[in-house]
Image 1 (cartoon, helix red, strand yellow):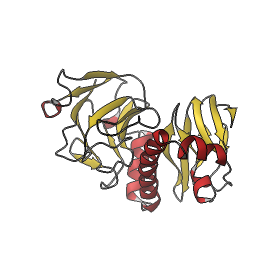
Image 2 (tube, helix red, strand yellow):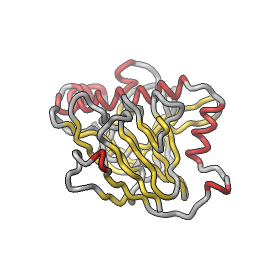
Image 3 (cartoon, one colour):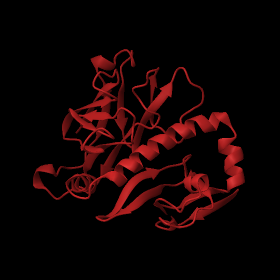
Length: 262
């Protein structure tokens, strides 16, 4: 295992390249994307503490996606022996990694299966911020608040100003060991049967627009009554100015919040 630094915009590996190593992010950010008939589609942005590129060593296949440094990014380059010993060989890291891996695969498979056309066009416009007059608004603030439905999860109430994007929401379970794999900004307590996945969803900002992206969670996310995720028609939902409802999991989930955009 050795350390390497990538410059802003530098290609780490390209979709279709041979796979010889995985990468553990020490600092910086990495964008993961795939090529579709409609152009490049961004799957996710990874941060400090997250691992990527390991699938090629597991299935001995070429790279399934492209990885590019968004800023100056330092990583540990992990060969196959180190990966087996440091990740696969240690239960405390293995179980969270597998949970995250399955969610990542659900997201990727859903995107690859998606029909090039209306659904891709909608997600692309939402992520890029279309120049539609009714959707323009000045940059503001986002605040996450608990509701009466989530009072058992937050007895003292929850009011959190979100100032860093992407803002990641996931599960901290009472009845399983270990910590979530990678960085999670808000850890929600949950017990079996889980409503919240380890890496459930993110709140993102593009220009002056905000939106919620489901990360391939098992039970999905509901934003203003719209279901997003593997069982929905999209993985992305926009946030409007004012109050927005956010349900982490199914409609009956106890993790129900308000996202106030001002």
